[in-house]
Length: 207
Image (tube, rainbow, N blue to C red; front, side):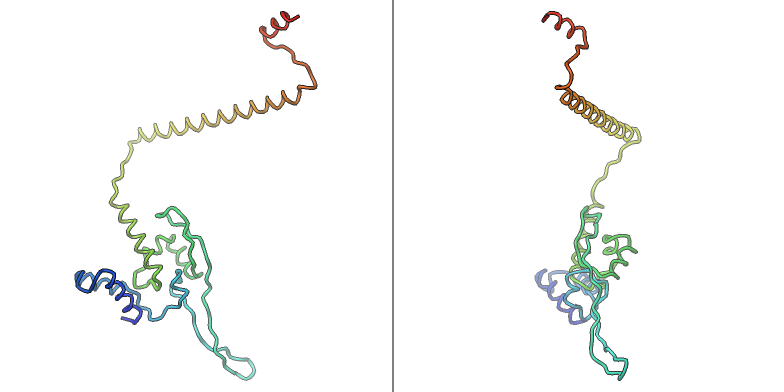
């Protein structure tokens, strides 16, 4: 076990209250889950880097072959990834390699579920993986009710009728608004001509 894994194991033991609080088999499982990478750069602890970290090497000049130390940093992007289990977007810093891995897995949820704990180099990835696994287990325990085909047809018919009523109401509202605008525009240009019998009789009575 690397030094970093030992330090994380000590934190876990302190949180549970000591070495003897949990069974030995469970603590052995926790040891196997801890990341086996020795060193992780500081930026990687705040994102999902999928094994990409800073690298060091030499820059060699073309003329004299002189060497000077240099470093290669990973291509880190801040992205909004959609999580189906949370039904919202997650803003996280990821490398382009991690984005390809997420696309290949089918989403951020599937990537975190398929990646083993010991391959998660960052504490953030371990925390998100544990949260998603807990939410999926809670969903599996929920009782789900199903409708019969007749009930589904009735529900769909109710939705269709509601949409049709809304559509008719919007159409009537547009017609009334257009008629009102025409009346307002023609007030000063032409006099009112009675249309119905009641309007004609009322006009004759006034005369």
